[in-house]
Image (cartoon, rainbow, N blue to C red; front, side, top):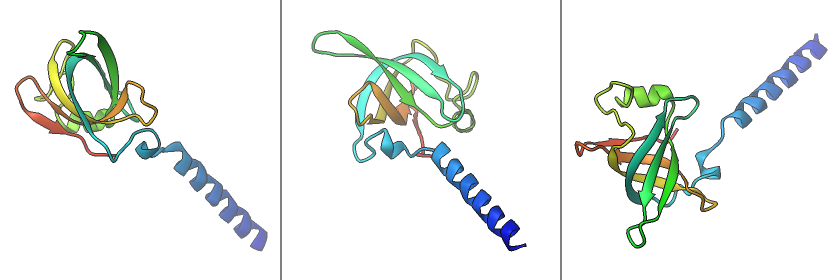
Length: 130
């Protein structure tokens, strides 16, 4: 009986460890102590789990060069709850010019975690950290 109980406890501990490792902290990828702002044109929006993504082309005003930023969002459910869906009240689509605030990637790449987006109708939508 003791061996079964001990075995069950070890198994539960292993399962909890795997579960914790599967969900990562955004602080490991993004600088959550720093927000940056930019304006750009939506390239695409992906409604996926566990996190969605928006690709936004940002032009450098000084020389006109453009970079595409990939911004992580909440899950497809979070986006839908915010009205950001194929036909929701806060829908964004390719070609929309938007302002956005994000946590930049720690490694300096064109990657960020979206904090808020100002839609073409000037409505701001804020994202919660998950």
